[in-house]
Length: 561
Image 1 (tube, one colour):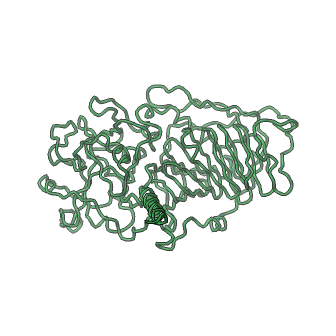
Image 2: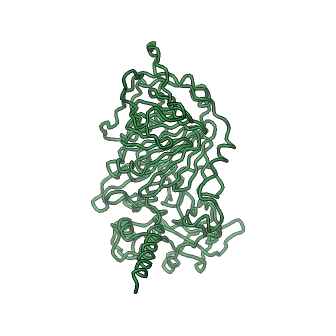
Image 3: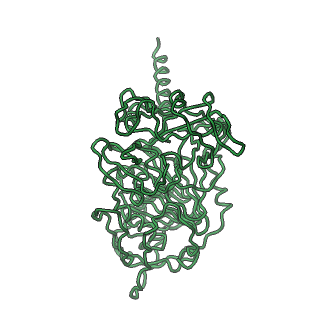
C-alpha cells in the first residue's frame, strides 16, 4: 500500500471523527427567563417567529426581538443577556465552548461572571466585534452606522476593521464609519433594571445548593424552600403547587432539533428542575433532587420515562363520552432511574447525567421496591397520559388542554416503554441545513434593517467619575432580599430621546419571570454643576481609529478623562 493510500485513510478517519463529534448536541442550553411586552423568538433559520414564552430553551440560530416598550432576559448558566425595547439579537452559536451573539440593532446588556466563558464570547454588530477580557458587565447600542460600547465592570476589547480598542470600566466608546468618540459611562433606566437583577443574583440562596452554571437556578429562590436529606442530598420543594400536581404536567411539549421532544414548563421557576436532576416523593410531597454537583451540569430536553405508543390504548373522557385511543404517557425520573436519550450523547456526558442512577437502570422506574420515593415494583409515580396522536404533528402540545387518561395499575404494568417518534415535518437537522432544504444558513440581516422602524438619535451627555459597584456582597441566610436602593453613580441620558422614563419606557407590560417584590431603583439625585466637558475625541481622517492598539481608560497626556 502506498503512502498516498495511508494519507487518504487518515483523512477519512479524521473526517469521520469530526462528523461524530458534530453530531453530539451541546450540553449547554439557555433559557428565556423574563418576558415583558411584545417579545418574539424565531427558533431556527427558516422557521417563522412566534411569541417568546417563559422557560423556552435558547440555542444556536435563535433570533430574539423586542417591540416598543418591551424587554426580555436570556440566561445561559451564570451569564445574563438582556434586551431593551426595539432590539434584535441573534444567538449565532451556543455550545459548550462558544457564545456568539449578533446585535442587529437596539440595546443589549451582557453580564459574564465566569472567567471560563470569556474565551468563547463574542458580540458582533454591523460595525464591529466586542469581547470581554475580564468578567463584568457591558452594554452595547447598535445602529446601522454606529456602535456604542459602555463598560460598567470589567474590561472589553472592541475590534473595528482590524483595529482594536480596549475599553475599561466606567468608559464608553462610540464607533462610527469614519471616527471613534470616547467618554465616560452613561446610564439610563435600562441599566438600573439590569443592575437590580444582577444584585438579586448575587444574594441567591439556591447558589449554595447548586452551581451557578445550572441555567435557571436563580428562579428557585422566590418559589420554594431547600432542605437537606440524608439519602438524596439537597432537595428543593416548590411552594405554590396545588393538589394533584405532578412534575411535567403543567406545561407543553415541543420538538427542538436535535434533542427531540422538549418540555417547556409554565411555572416561573420551571426550568432547572425539568432539565437537570430528578424528582422524588418525600413525605407525600414532590421534591426536586439536583444531585451531586461536579462541574457544569449536562442539559437534557426532559428527564422523563416514556410509556405507550400506537399499540397501547386507554380510555379518554370527552364531550362525546368515553373513547378508546392509542395513548402516550410519561413520568418524572427518580434519582435511581437512568435517563435514556433519543439523540447522540457521549459516554462521558451520559455518565454525568446518570451519575446517581442504578447500574442496571433503564429509565423505566422498575424494581427497588423498598425505596423511600415510593417507586415500588412496576410503579411510575406522576404518570401523565394523553392521546398518542397529540405527538403526530409538529408544534406545541399544551398538556393542560389535552385529554388525559387514568391508567389502572394492571394496564400500567403491561405498558411498553417507548418514546414518541419525531412529528411530521421535523426531519431537518442543524448539520447540512442549506443543502437539505434550501434554507439559508443565517438570518437575512439586511431585511431586518430594512423592515425596522427608525430609532431616535442617541445624544450623549458627560457623566461624573465612575465608581464600580460592589460585585460580591456577603450572602445572607433566608430568602434573598432586594438591596436597599442607593443613588446611582452614573449620569442619565437625559438628552437621548426615547431612552428616558418619560418616553417609551412609560408603557410597562406584565412581566413573565420577574421578581414581583423587587423595589424600583430611584433616579439619581441632582448632581452639582459639572465642569465643562472636553470635546469628543474623533478618529483619524480616512476612518482609521485614533486608538489603534491603545487603551481607553488610562488618560493620555492632554486627553479628556
